[in-house]
Image 1 (cartoon, chains in turn yellow, blue):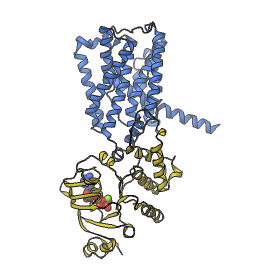
Image 2 (cartoon, rainbow over the protein chains, first blue to last red; image 1 turned 120 degrees about the horizontal axis):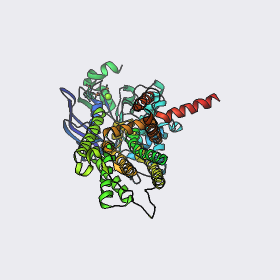
Image 3 (spheres, chains in turn purple, orange; image 1 turned 30 degrees about the vertical axis):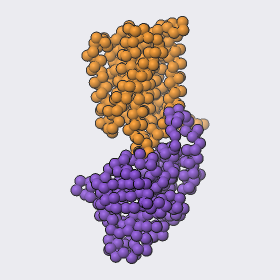
Image 4 (cartoon, rainbow over the protein chains, first blue to last red; image 1 turned 135 degrees about the horizontal axis):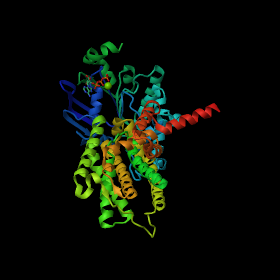
Length: 249
Length: 288
Ligand SMILES: Nc1ncnc2c1ncn2[C@@H]1O[C@H](COP(=O)(O)OP(=O)(O)OP(=O)(O)O)[C@@H](O)[C@H]1O
Ligand SMILES: [Mg+2]
């Protein structure tokens, strides 16, 4: 059974239909990529799945449970975590505090919310450090998020999503704006996370997609036009016409 | 007389601590804090005057009324953002002010509610300025300690996260409006606490205690002291009350001076006196 599922999911902004009757099934334990040209509706799809926007039509199921219309903070508690395409961290916080608030959000108990010192939550702090360690930022835990490099901020972006110990990880172009060297590291990171989490990955860089994905869905003008393994997608003539034609070479 | 001024400073500082949980930590500029301050002062003042309640009962009532009125106002405000939020806190404050102004049989309207006693406790006569000064000082330290615990708790971190990035905080699993409301209620409780101490200090609840000018003053004082730190509102209160008590006697247009101080802070020291001081300190350390 699919862990995360969209059924006939649509979202319109006025006259524009950004997501159009999308059917998507994410199987547990897989890395499922979503590709498509700029403006295809990929980020909007994430915004629907995570409850940031309410869909105009269709349903979303998580672990067999209908979560359509559930608000973002509740969906996070169910175990869906996302990273953002445009870096979206807490700039004035240290790196550790960035992941700490993420880990605390989904911790089992909020006892002492108003009076306990943050350091006294040993489990939360350990989980937060683990997330920084996973992305290789542990040495910079006391630095401020606004003072690290763009590449490091992208890693932090990922660490914040990881810190919540989610069941499904939605990654929106984690390699956006990275140098080739940083991209290589990010790909290694995503590959290392594969298997530990169910991952949905939006990415533009074709070589990354083809090498890490178990399944790929292709979006074009809001609709899914193809789905399959990397090999199937590469062979698909419609995909080549719509998307790969200009990019794959 | 000197005791009375310092007592007033501590009371205003408690008021400022409550505001700064909203302004400095959560990033919400409330222009209606006097709503909670004044409501608590009226209710507790009324009970002190006509029902002879004890001093700690009065303070408890003040905390309760402050929190409750903040719950109502906060509930209406937290869904809005930016200027709408500010205007709404302001407008609701005006509404409360108008009720107090009209309801003369209870509040005394423009004349205020006089005759608020300072009940004795354990044989201590708090009508003595020194005794009351000691009490307020102790309660101020208690408030400061409580606020420090709050801002160093997970709640403090979450409120700052909301200030920094609301969308991300929500995506992480925090019900942002609910947390803003909680900040309101806590801030309201501190305001109410201060309001009751204020009423007992002067033996009267003046109509201004629930007025928007008073709300503006606490914002002013907090920004001058520095909203970025726990101690900012305290320093702001010292500056504000001291100026208003000393300079206003010499010069009727003293708010002008305050305005100039405010402009300097906004232009050069966004972090208020606290930041200015730490900059000077760092500079002199480097120079030596
Ligand atoms: N909040 C919004 N209001 C109005 N239109 C929006 C909104 N969000 C997205 N859109 C529009 O929906 C369409 C899909 O945008 P979306 O960001 O989902 O594309 P994308 O596939 O993520 O593109 P990219 O690869 O550039 O990130 C675009 O035309 C965009 O302008
Ligand atoms: Mg996008």
